[in-house]
Length: 203
Image (cartoon, rainbow, N blue to C red; front, side, top):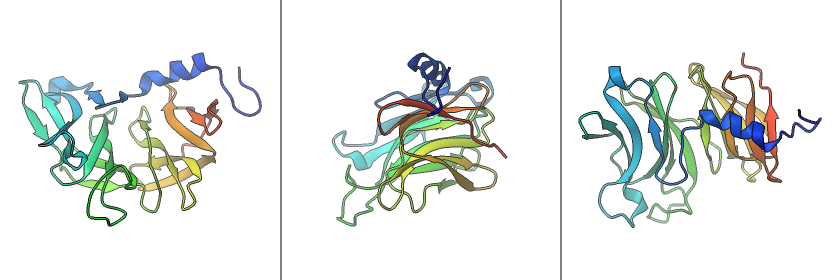
């Protein structure tokens, strides 16, 4: 099905994409355990001025139609996704990384995780540049993402939530990491816009 370069047909990649939980703009991630958590979805919204990206916040939508904001800051928080066990929310954040006194699209983008029970959050891409789309492993124990190094060489990483460590799976990745439903493979676009796959060691 694939050649030695690891390139897959687009139909295979689209099959993998069933585990992806983000839309292209103002993404909505649906909870798969809404009955116990009373949570319908996690979304991005702006607090005040829709033209001010620093007011973009993450909130959860509850069954009764109310909102519960997970973030409340002067940062740009976007693209939230539930972990499959609904214990975590992953999202992308921009702060004033270039110290120009404002938060905008020129600032570095980081991947953050927030534990829903205690609302504590942490950055998992410290020292990396321009973190992009991410996808949870079906076990909720790992999350795949693409980010750049100090010279913007994009790489595919897997972050282990329990261990707090990440592994470089391969160089040359571009976007859209997506786990296969059984969690055995990761499909992604490379820098030449080809669909590729990797079989990472999960231990």
